[in-house]
Image 1: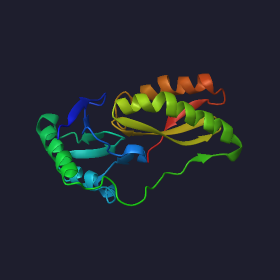
Image 2 (image 1 turned 135 degrees about the vertical axis):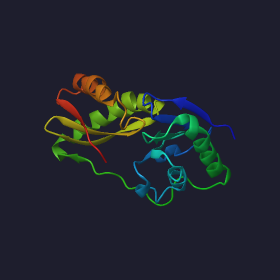
Image 3 (image 1 turned 90 degrees about the vertical axis):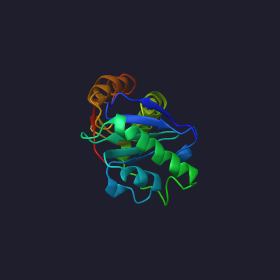
Image 4 (image 1 turned 30 degrees about the horizontal axis):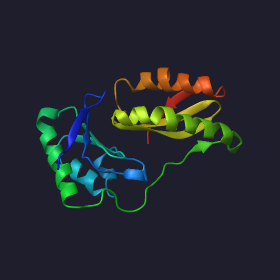
Length: 186
């Protein structure tokens, strides 16, 4: 099994491409701590490595973020080995049902929310996924769009600029009801 690696805009995060589906059509899964990995044998295996701070599972990739004390020169071979062992063993990536976060918006704004989600899905998510992350709609109230950054985008030094200058400007251009974009945590 050959696993490619790619850098991301977040220097603490690498993107691993195992050459097969990871989540496939199931969406994405973000594990911000070892306490959240009960439903993912792959994330649990990665968190067992000393120095792993976050694991994100995308359609065909895995991103791993290190703690400040760890370095990629030491950790890269360990992460590659853990991912390879998982897939060679034929274990599932996830077990059980996903726990979706709730979306908060006024039902009267449903048409606006559909426009926002469509723009996020077609114009933002592909670019964010290419950097090893995801962006998830969490709400829309009084002109404020609430978004959650996941994977390599969570904690990335450039994520605030991406949200404010990229995503917010684009949404405001196409959806006049959007006044601002705010980042929310899980």
